[in-house]
Image (cartoon, rainbow, N blue to C red):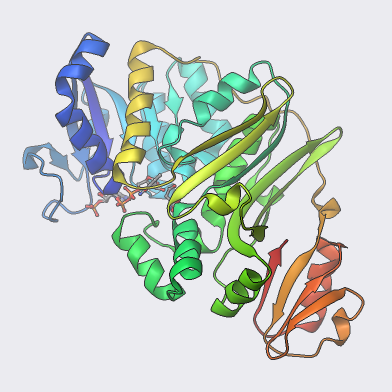
Length: 396
Ligand code: NAP
Ligand code: HSE
């Protein structure tokens, strides 16, 4: 029997339990053995759950899972950064395989946990941590084995994309749509990590570190979220035939890379403009593979649980390499070389400081305008030296 110890019984954990229960026979067939979730770690034993489970399986005690010799795979889907990290580290140290959907942990401890797993000869897999249900990490690992990846760009957060789509297409308010995204199980327990861009940044950290074979940490990525975007921004940009999306991009150059998460107003009809609701899409460019686009559900119970289960299956069938996929090359950060044209909204103050960059004014109060091409760092300096009130910067 293939025993699974499940850490967390929320959206993703319940999704995994549901699929494993519903597909027991098919799984037995492809794995030549029965797969069963033997124990589940939760915080509250009495909480009402949507997917029914035998209460005897629930526990508050991680040690019961760690010490259970029938459990060979630990699936970590708690969303808790520090406790989750400790559970994963201890499980790997004990020689258990680990599958996680927790990008916060993968991002914060990527090198350490990958090396630990490799040294212990066990799997550390995290397909669901980026792009939800989209098969992305495993294809990327295959691509980097012989391609040189030159760029990765994508919509990586279902919650933000859901909010922006509903604000644009249905004119709904930011707060109302955020509540709906929470109800649908897309948002993190603390949704500020979604809307402030941290969740996307962590995913970009994972993809760029893998893709470029370097060490690109959270601090190496510029980041802005969608929390300052107003109905007016969306309306004015719609008038310019553009829709706002939160986009993560990373580009490799001969001597380094640049990496940024920023709201961007993309042209209606362009590829990313058509990625809506909680869907995600990722473009990868490599010297042999050319331009690859992957598209699918970026969040939600079953698509995410599906990705977790594919990792569990890969563990059992030994479908992936046990060596760490990380290369750890020293790469130079070139973020200061990011140039672009921008839409700016300034909620107070005058336009004097911006006279040399404005090419078109879209609104007087608050002042909204489009800039000429400018170095992003110079624009941020201008804003920092002048502006005390709220503002929004959207790349074009
Ligand atoms: P969730 O619905 O909030 O569920 C979290 C579960 O973990 C709950 O059952 C909770 O227990 C348990 N838990 C939390 N902290 C714990 C702790 N310290 N010790 C023991 N149990 C703990 O979260 P989720 O949406 O399933 O997300 C789980 C992970 O998957 C997160 O890292 C998230 O980023 C990632 N992810 C989620 C999605 C998605 O669409 N939701 C997609 C991709 C990746 P109680 O129920 O008893 O409170
Ligand atoms: N909160 C995340 C999102 C879950 O909205 O994309 C999937 O990683």
